[in-house]
Length: 231
Image (cartoon, rainbow, N blue to C red):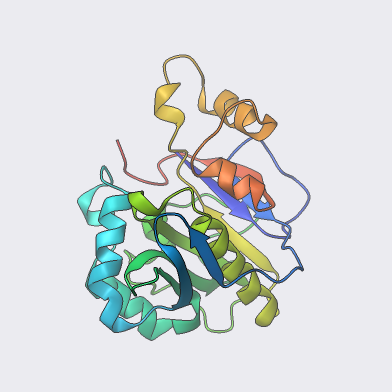
């Protein structure tokens, strides 16, 4: 199952994970502080970072199906296709510790608000971003990952803010993103996915992915079965 999030989408949110995000107009910080790393910064990903980006992907999604993992070759293709949509967070000594992948899209390609259902691999063109539309009016959040030792330091917030800044800079309609409800496995024997999402939205449960998206202003749009292959 996958939640999907959308910024400034039509007013028809449901208890599922395609969400939409009302993009904040306040500028976001570009630096961060943490007890573990003192300080760090964010910049556009480069091809030289590709092996580090793959390492973040593998650490972030250890149970994801191997053919759905983003490799160094994929990251290089992303950077070539849409460089401004690829963000990296580096610590004080220049180690790449977090990253995000985005591309431009438009309705009528692999999705629309009338028929939003799709899989992650359909969206990202088997991880090559072949669905990137240079003149697309929406930003699609394909991936975000942070090394385990650097979580809960505000890096996710920093990456989401960079995405929102990009939406504003390019004058796009908004930001859509699929999400994996990582915490659902703890409740799958007692709650349906719909009930789980409703409780996360209400704040009664915390989900490592969806709760972060909701805090950043996203709203759930629809639940999409089989979005990812992650047992």
